[in-house]
Length: 560
Image (tube, rainbow, N blue to C red; front, side, top):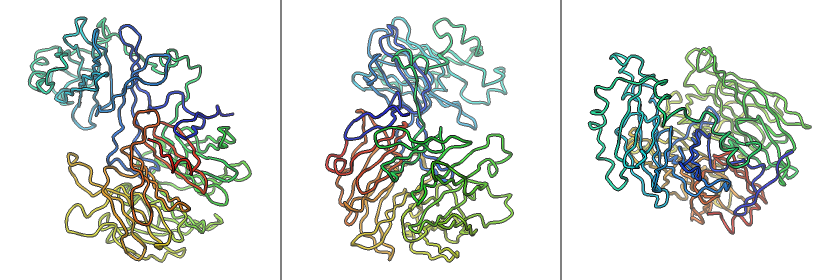
């Protein structure tokens, strides 16, 4: 049923995507001689399950890749655009590419970016003092760039422009990449826009050298590379090495898919919603969410279900209204925490729950405030049910690592960060993993120090603290962790970070064995999900790839 595997850097890629290295593909643009194809895409943020959000240090957001079809290995990649890419134009004589980007900020501004990128030298110049760039092209001589931009902001609706969402301006900008592009100031661009009669969208379409943008980039890509069927997936939100040499995954287009380790699909389940987490229990459990787009409010727009895989059937066990995260103890008991951010109309605060291992008893509790940035925790396989609670419990601040018993008794263990009386004392976007070794039982915790300014560089941490409060080691980090796993029989901690780095550390001492960028095709990617057992490691990536490797070869020769 599957299409087998590909092998790369000791990883076997299972039922691989047609076009690795991309998020959601947004555009395809030919060079003038039609020898080079630019493909643009946007990568998802880590927002699954809906009761989790981690953005810190996430570098891979908007991508331009250049290809010489039919070869599918890119000849160059640009990852430094900061806004969605709308258009790409090739210089008529040199190796410079112009990239036009931008979007509405949701409140006032049409933010824009223009990049001039030399794909052979990797030199790039960026202009940010510009409204959203919707279309662009080099002039025939290559000295200038003709660009179509939106207004600076939506307040233009109070002027003769009328509807700012259907108003466009033409600019002519220098294309000399050797110049300092910061010289293209906001005032210079405004001077060109003043006095222009804004164009409508239909007017832009009638400009011969702009014309109509490609509506179906996948069709263009399929034709260029001879792809009869284009296979694409969202990020692999979770991956699990399960019994009988199986590997299970969840992504946006399924509730659950199960493969053998030779790449053949055994089972596939599709229903309303999609799977976000997999729990290895006696019978596999899947956390599935379904967002109702037409719901009256944020509380009622999300349905959460737990489904059990048994004898080839996936049956619903629990159905809940709201956004939940779950963590499973060694006993099989499951703790569900509910996002309180949209709880204004709830009749009861007792929306957290403990589900017994036999899936027959549900106990409701009120464990305090929960929001997606401050309280997410998944610590499977531990002897206790762990959760994060503020001080007081109704607060998002002063977070403590806590345990809760089946009957609802709470023990507060220790604060995630020591209170130094400053904003850095508040932890956000944390990721957890339970560890038990000769040093005793403890928790690996990775997260970021809070800072309200988006201009301040990411300030993160990863540490091990035992349950008795003793801290064994700590490192600074440049990004939030997507997933952490412990390789018990090797004494290693594996960490996948949102900046694309993958780390292996000694669990007892924190000594770094490996900390490098994950580059499966020679270009950066991000691992968003991990699983390990005694013999293998499985990964799920941001571009929808799933891979498995023998644990021994993976540890001896880590990919780079």
